[in-house]
Length: 73
Image (cartoon, rainbow, N blue to C red; front, side, top):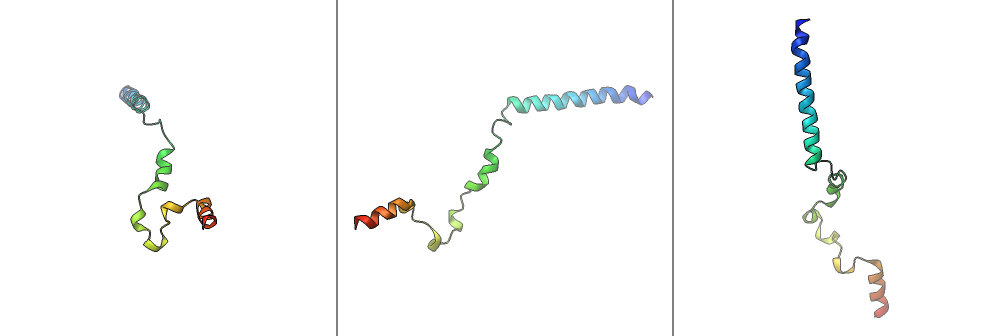
């Protein structure tokens, strides 16, 4: 039973530290944007990994641009 005298204050201190860490992270903006890190993998800079013959010409990426070029000839 004497161990409870030690364990209760330790549990209260650890709970206080957990609450402090949670509120610190909320106030510092850790939970402001939860979706960008999940989407950032889609926007990696991996252009150097794409073979040259598979790269799309950035000037004519829109299909209507290619159609307009055919009709203008």
